[in-house]
Image (cartoon, rainbow, N blue to C red; front, side):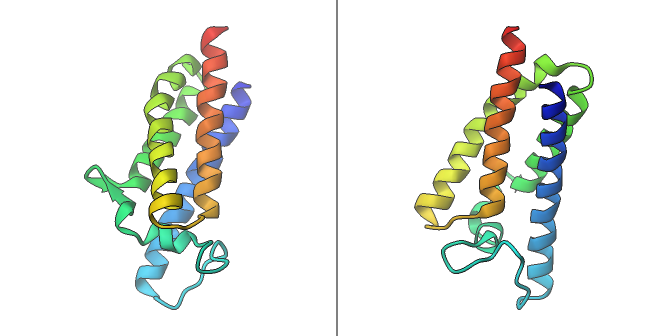
Length: 131
Protein backbone atom coordinates (compact mmCIF):
# COMPACT_ATOMS: atom_id res chain seq x y z
CA UNK A 1 0.00 0.00 0.00
CA UNK A 2 2.92 2.34 0.70
CA UNK A 3 4.21 1.86 -2.85
CA UNK A 4 0.75 2.76 -4.11
CA UNK A 5 1.01 6.06 -2.24
CA UNK A 6 4.44 6.71 -3.77
CA UNK A 7 3.22 5.90 -7.29
CA UNK A 8 0.04 7.96 -6.97
CA UNK A 9 1.95 10.89 -5.51
CA UNK A 10 4.20 10.76 -8.56
CA UNK A 11 1.18 10.59 -10.87
CA UNK A 12 -0.39 13.52 -9.00
CA UNK A 13 2.79 15.54 -9.52
CA UNK A 14 2.83 14.65 -13.22
CA UNK A 15 -0.81 15.67 -13.70
CA UNK A 16 -0.23 18.91 -11.81
CA UNK A 17 2.72 19.72 -14.07
CA UNK A 18 0.49 18.89 -17.06
CA UNK A 19 -2.13 21.36 -15.78
CA UNK A 20 0.55 24.04 -15.51
CA UNK A 21 1.78 23.18 -19.02
CA UNK A 22 -1.73 23.39 -20.52
CA UNK A 23 -2.48 26.70 -18.84
CA UNK A 24 0.83 28.26 -19.92
CA UNK A 25 0.56 26.89 -23.46
CA UNK A 26 -3.06 28.11 -23.79
CA UNK A 27 -2.03 31.54 -22.48
CA UNK A 28 0.78 31.83 -25.03
CA UNK A 29 -1.08 30.15 -27.91
CA UNK A 30 -4.87 30.65 -27.65
CA UNK A 31 -5.50 28.20 -30.52
CA UNK A 32 -3.72 25.36 -28.67
CA UNK A 33 -6.01 22.39 -28.04
CA UNK A 34 -4.77 19.89 -25.43
CA UNK A 35 -5.63 16.19 -25.54
CA UNK A 36 -7.91 16.57 -22.53
CA UNK A 37 -10.31 18.88 -24.40
CA UNK A 38 -12.98 16.65 -25.90
CA UNK A 39 -15.81 19.16 -26.39
CA UNK A 40 -17.43 22.17 -24.75
CA UNK A 41 -18.64 20.18 -21.73
CA UNK A 42 -15.56 17.98 -21.33
CA UNK A 43 -12.63 20.35 -21.15
CA UNK A 44 -9.59 20.66 -18.93
CA UNK A 45 -8.83 24.03 -20.51
CA UNK A 46 -12.11 25.39 -19.21
CA UNK A 47 -11.10 24.36 -15.69
CA UNK A 48 -7.48 25.51 -15.94
CA UNK A 49 -8.34 28.90 -17.44
CA UNK A 50 -11.28 29.65 -15.11
CA UNK A 51 -11.50 32.16 -12.30
CA UNK A 52 -11.44 29.18 -9.93
CA UNK A 53 -7.88 28.30 -10.96
CA UNK A 54 -6.57 30.59 -8.24
CA UNK A 55 -8.18 30.14 -4.85
CA UNK A 56 -6.82 31.18 -1.47
CA UNK A 57 -4.07 33.49 -2.80
CA UNK A 58 -2.21 31.04 -5.06
CA UNK A 59 -2.94 28.92 -8.12
CA UNK A 60 -4.38 25.52 -7.19
CA UNK A 61 -1.46 23.87 -8.95
CA UNK A 62 0.92 25.29 -6.33
CA UNK A 63 -1.08 23.53 -3.63
CA UNK A 64 -1.02 20.36 -5.72
CA UNK A 65 2.74 20.47 -6.13
CA UNK A 66 3.23 20.98 -2.39
CA UNK A 67 0.72 18.27 -1.45
CA UNK A 68 1.96 15.59 -3.86
CA UNK A 69 5.58 16.49 -3.15
CA UNK A 70 4.99 16.04 0.59
CA UNK A 71 3.11 12.79 0.04
CA UNK A 72 5.95 11.50 -2.12
CA UNK A 73 8.62 12.42 0.43
CA UNK A 74 6.61 11.15 3.40
CA UNK A 75 5.88 7.85 1.65
CA UNK A 76 9.51 6.87 2.29
CA UNK A 77 9.61 7.56 6.00
CA UNK A 78 6.57 9.04 7.73
CA UNK A 79 3.62 7.47 5.92
CA UNK A 80 1.29 8.01 8.86
CA UNK A 81 1.59 11.81 8.44
CA UNK A 82 0.09 11.61 4.97
CA UNK A 83 -3.34 11.05 6.47
CA UNK A 84 -3.23 14.36 8.31
CA UNK A 85 -2.28 16.39 5.25
CA UNK A 86 -4.76 14.42 3.13
CA UNK A 87 -7.79 15.51 5.13
CA UNK A 88 -7.70 19.19 4.05
CA UNK A 89 -6.64 18.10 0.55
CA UNK A 90 -9.71 15.89 0.29
CA UNK A 91 -12.01 18.66 1.50
CA UNK A 92 -10.45 20.96 -1.11
CA UNK A 93 -10.95 18.19 -3.70
CA UNK A 94 -14.68 18.03 -3.04
CA UNK A 95 -14.91 21.82 -3.23
CA UNK A 96 -13.08 21.90 -6.57
CA UNK A 97 -15.28 19.09 -7.91
CA UNK A 98 -18.36 21.07 -6.88
CA UNK A 99 -17.06 24.17 -8.66
CA UNK A 100 -16.25 22.21 -11.80
CA UNK A 101 -19.41 20.12 -12.09
CA UNK A 102 -22.03 22.48 -10.68
CA UNK A 103 -20.72 26.00 -11.22
CA UNK A 104 -18.90 25.56 -14.53
CA UNK A 105 -21.03 22.66 -15.81
CA UNK A 106 -17.80 21.08 -16.98
CA UNK A 107 -16.10 17.70 -16.72
CA UNK A 108 -12.31 17.93 -16.58
CA UNK A 109 -10.69 14.54 -17.20
CA UNK A 110 -7.38 15.56 -15.63
CA UNK A 111 -9.16 17.03 -12.62
CA UNK A 112 -11.29 13.88 -12.18
CA UNK A 113 -8.18 11.70 -12.12
CA UNK A 114 -6.62 14.06 -9.58
CA UNK A 115 -9.78 13.83 -7.45
CA UNK A 116 -9.58 10.03 -7.54
CA UNK A 117 -5.90 10.13 -6.58
CA UNK A 118 -6.70 12.38 -3.62
CA UNK A 119 -9.49 10.07 -2.44
CA UNK A 120 -7.19 7.08 -2.73
CA UNK A 121 -4.42 8.87 -0.83
CA UNK A 122 -6.67 9.77 2.09
CA UNK A 123 -8.16 6.27 2.17
CA UNK A 124 -4.83 4.43 1.94
CA UNK A 125 -3.19 6.71 4.48
CA UNK A 126 -6.14 6.19 6.85
CA UNK A 127 -5.76 2.42 6.58
CA UNK A 128 -2.04 2.75 7.30
CA UNK A 129 -2.77 5.12 10.22
CA UNK A 130 -5.11 2.67 11.97
CA UNK A 131 -2.82 -0.34 11.47
